[in-house]
Length: 396
Image (tube, rainbow, N blue to C red; front, side, top):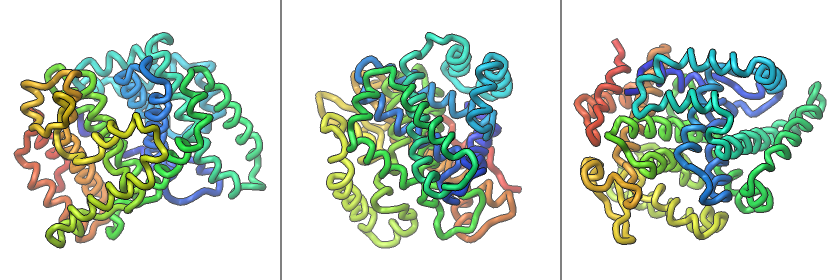
């Protein structure tokens, strides 16, 4: 089971500010937001690549690299690359040693695969190429915003050349060419980038600030870790739970973050909002993507907190406990919306806990914390004891 210290480490990424030696936007440029954006790029690049991609390895590689980066904090890229070139093995060993105690608590041999990822160049070879390209594309997205703000900043042209050269060096798999030639896919990922600026708990005074983009990655990682607590989850179940978690708030790029109390304030309002979101998705987002991708993304984003399978070509809503017993097989393409919902609430609880613990609280954070703590006091989902994880975050 994931530990409190590992959960706390995830949120340290909210305090790592990117490009902090340049003039930059004051929101959406944390390491957490960048890593989330990177995983959206990775999803699109992998879809462009096709059937050769091992989606479990891609997902886990993204998580491995996320934690690797948090441990090393905000080292400037030229320094980082120089260190990796000269001391790469030692740096990887340092990161793995730092994470070993917590990572060994994650189920399913997760940490063993993390060690292989950094020790064996041929392990996840294609997936590493995709993640490297995703990293450079997410960095370039940031740089296109940074560059006009820093015309006289020392070294800005050198940084521009490094980013350009880094992107060019990623042209090592077929999906890269498909993506680089598609303005629509780039427009989709630029639209997704707006979620970096959408602040969560917009009416609440709290620290640290978190944004919808980073929140989606937190939910995705937590959903993956919780899925590994299940008895031998199938590959598609693991991947679906990660990417359904990653995509669960994408409609907010069009509607913004409408808080739950507002959605529930008037009977039927939540259904109206959901209908508007689906209508806007059809008008704005899906036309930017290949039609062959639509069904999968709708499966992730519509009724995102319902557990589902696909049986005889039809989507069926089923309880996650039933998936455990009857449908834990790639053939049924299972996704645990109930687990994702629990992780969405866990993310919200940790956000309120961190702020209150820092001495910054208001009515929204206090009531949110109290309601979620009470709701998950004895909560078990799909056989996973969520009450244990929620119990880590008690305020004395």
